[in-house]
Length: 579
Image (cartoon, rainbow, N blue to C red; front, side, top):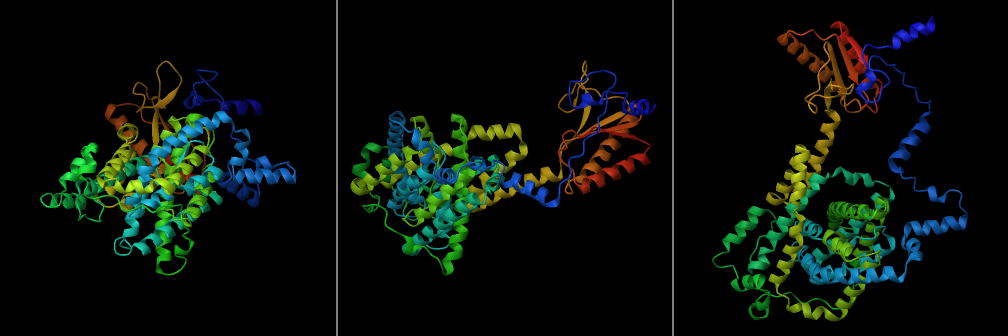
């Protein structure tokens, strides 16, 4: 008798299992199986498991298990310097590909480095220095096979903007340079710290949409800044917003534009005849030490730390995004935390060898990939070419017109404006598009740092909105099947008479539990009012579909209890599908 009674309680008049799956044994009735209670754990074990899953989800110590002491030492060296792991399999065929790729990106990076140093308000040689030491460090410590290291336009502009807010690079070039090295040092410290403590997930809070908008706005800002060299304007605003730049440009139209320089920018063949303003002298030789120039105390220490942290995070975001992109194209795994340590180490060493913040360059990495690079040796080849340039060829760059450099920078950054990505974001998620536009217009009309702040703020706002206002949906039955789906996505689906089926598409926490309860009641009220208007039977059963609910805390449980009591007062039967 007991078994028969239990079986009667388990039978239902509709196929509730089909609400979350199209596979079911019966069209008329099914069995409801109780959810098993997970095994009990003590507080310490539960906390340990949570920490491990949060910070060590990839189980980085797995290769060290059951290994001898000497083997663990070797594995440890290979973990810090991956070149000793993949270097054993290196051969002449791979070197041929790396040599061609390295020479190719070197030919691209030399004029870019000179231009990017200009964006950072530094002498040209510092751009070249930053393509010598950092790529060498990364080649030994990095895990990406395709990323090309060096100065990039966005970070150079950001660094130059933040630094000149503190020190005028024209009147105090020495202090400005020292602050740049200090910021680079703390950028490296920030990156290495995030990687060492496995906090790389923090950069994921900057959404792809915000990055697209920020990059596009920065590209336009950089291009506008080049109008000074392209038009030959001597007196130019130090502000980066579009209004100040255009005011400076049009205010100089009658007496400040250098038409010879304009012709040079448009017609490269005539540059030797008409060039009036040329690149300053580039120091010959390899990187000098700059350890004594870093501010380790004084008023500029805090400023260098703040600027370095911001620049380091932006550089890190760009490098990880580039590395992951090419890793997926070649089907290999990229360890984000190792990348952060490698990027941080190269910037720390770079700050001590007259370099400013370097990171992965998308344009160089794309050329590196297309040229057939096989490993990070292509970065070593590029560094060798740069050092030869610094030793023997730098005097020739003295005669390169600023207009040509401006044209090089504009052509390099114009591809940062990704129209296709913006269109795709608009089609997929309108809120993401708002984040994209917010970052874009923030950079253009305000400043680079404000645009970055807007991008981060909107990304956090989206996260908070999704957490506190989870999606809910009313389900209906698709004709000819026993499958129940969202009525908004499937207009042909039909409601079951007298039954309201609501699906919760999120975990239920203290931050959204009250909203979930009120939203279900609002769904119920709206449906009852509509039933009265259409003279249809009233709602008698409420079914809450909780398959997407992956977790629920005590606040969520209390909210569901309150919902149950509220529905009892309305004389409604409540059914809950198992989570």
